[in-house]
Amino acid sequence: TVVDNIAGYDYGANELATSPVTMKDLDLLKQTITIDSDDQKYLRMAGDVLEAQTESIVNMWRGVISSMPHLAYYFKNEAGKTDEQYKQKVKERFKQWIMDLCYKPYDQDWLNYQHEIGLRHMSAKKNKTDDADAPAYIPMRYVIAFAAVVNDSIKPFMAKNGHSLGVIEKMHKAWCKAVLLHVTLWTRAYCDNEW
Ligand code: HEM
Image (tube, rainbow, N blue to C red; front, top):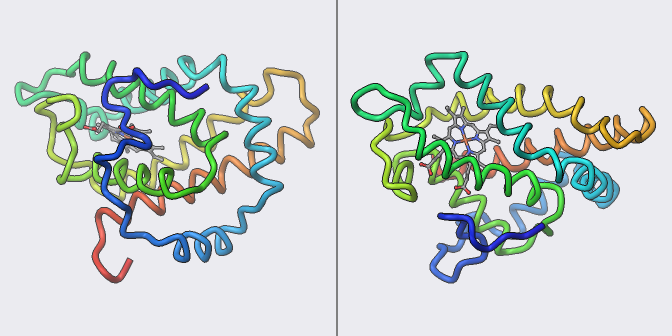
């Protein structure tokens, strides 16, 4: 499930900066979100269900973004046209993110890549990885708010392998906590010391 040849996917790369978030910060954040080893067990189960569906999942999220001009804007070039090549490149990393969210341990490499993803949504690094000329940053409020879509819409995909409703519920709860953990870490790139 871990792919090395996705363009711009720098998870674990040596040149990646160390996250300003410490392991201690991460530990307290995990406690605050109440994500535990049981959640991680259900996330792995979710990964097994979602693995074959990542393309459809990202297409579905993309449909939501395309339907809202104020969000579609962030994938458009200076001429106001959707940059399909940019979207395609980002899509492969997005698919891998679904797998990483389900399977990756919360170690230093993981932490560093979360900071990188935050930077890639804001002005420090947006567009740089794919050499795009789309708007310079995604406002932080939309990154946070879009979690509602990412969380709500995943549930039907979790039901595909015939798990009981109780298990699906636990996978979904774990997913929502994990998304909140990711998005919270990504906001670090937008914030200064008061994060
Ligand atoms: C990149 C997830 C919100 C637009 C990415 C990537 C992921 C991701 C996994 C690829 C990271 C990588 O390079 O490995 C999410 C999640 C969100 C969210 C989970 C909310 C919960 C948004 C919103 C927009 C957006 C609201 C606005 C349209 C983009 C763009 C990129 C990107 C344009 C490419 C950035 C670049 O130039 O490298 N996102 N995203 N994202 N996302 Fe988001």
